[in-house]
Length: 183
Image (tube, rainbow, N blue to C red; front, side):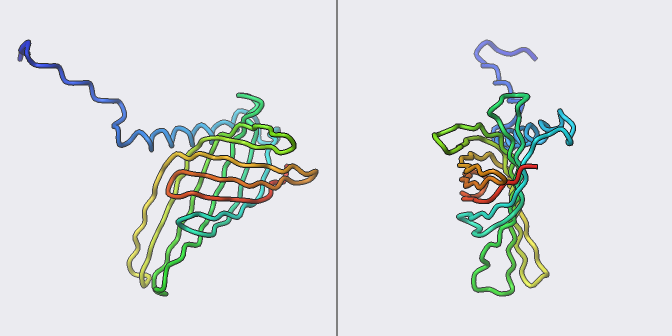
């Protein structure tokens, strides 16, 4: 069929649909942070491990492990931060209702020295999983994927590094604090 001169051509469909762009970008950011430490053997890597206590505006108290590794092959001030938080949301007054929520976050942060403090800012991806069950018979769950913005302060000591951090993205705003121990 030939097109008439008065018909306008259809715009090309985007490679990634508009509604799917944020999850695809989040997956790409998570893959980038997950694959960067693979460039050197694990025994030769310099990384910190620790624990964190978190408070989310939606799911309240959480705790979990944290790993921080330098990305010096890309830039001397870049670091990858991986964290897992298991939250303990309030199920209200219904004792038969059980709520669970956890988040896995991977971020690339840049160190920004400010006087004696070591601050950092960055972006990353977060995967959140919530589930709700009532009377053990019915379970509903939902997984969300999103981008997050991260900012925090580190207070370096000789053998450990306390930190505080704020994350916005995914499903909630999270304040976290904890201790990192160099490996």
